[in-house]
Amino acid sequence: MSTVLTRRQWLARSARVLAGAGAAAWVPAWMCAPAGAQARFSGAVPAVLYLGMGVQLTPFTDPRLRRAVASAVNREEVLRLFGRDFRDARAAMGIQPPGLPAHNPSAQPLPYDVDRAKALLAEAGFGAGQAPPAVELWTSAGRARVAEAVRADLVKVGFTITVRSLANFSDLVRLVRGGAARLFLIGWVADTPQDIFADILFHSTSQANHTRYANPEVDRLLREAAQAADPERKVKAYQEAERLIVQDAPVVPLLFYTVAVR
Image 1 (cartoon, helix red, strand yellow):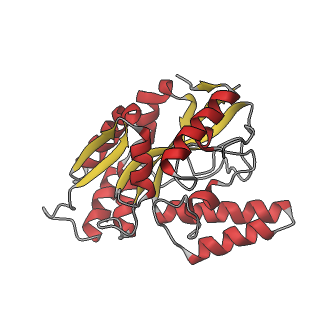
Image 2 (cartoon, one colour; image 1 turned 120 degrees about the vertical axis):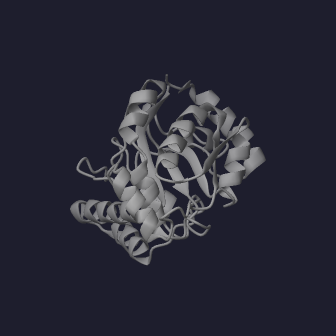
Image 3 (tube, helix red, strand yellow; image 1 turned 60 degrees about the vertical axis):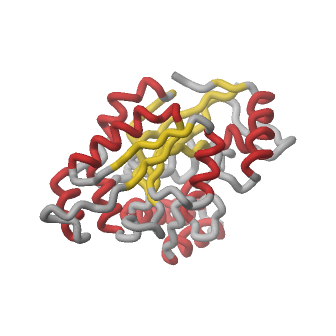
């Protein structure tokens, strides 16, 4: 099932959401173009659905626990169950979707491995009957079924998760933007054909960095890529930044998909 918007609808939704959430708030790009702007896409707009973790909030301050989450979630099963609900859906192997610069078709996510997830939890101090703190998984009402599938995967390895779905998308925007959500399921849709999701979502100074992730080496690579005149060097730096982000696991990429705009 796809979302199809006219350009006028795109801009009208943008104005309504920005009026309530502020220009720096997280919203999909098809809802957050600045008032009066022209839509930059015609056709399929690349997007990624991901599970985000607040890395400055317990228990997700520990990268071993975040990697346990990444290893516990079966993205292929998410695709099997819910792929029909997303246009052009495929399992997300990284952060940067196809159709955008620096997409890496050879990117490798942390693999689905229940035993590895349990071992990582034990390394983080949550083995032998010691469960991690209970966590709420926040999402929008339209993604509640996906969130329940993710919850079931996490429960299998020892997490205690409660799904909280919000009827008003703007409420989820404010919650995630404010940094109060320890665990959240949300999507990011490209705003321009030149978007680099690693830079937008994971540079330490980005207003859209809602996981509060910070890695000086990732920042350096993103800066190097932005300044590089050589296209090959630029792509190499962006893809290395993406690799480091995947290993640090502030998010678990689930699906690549597209949003239709006409």
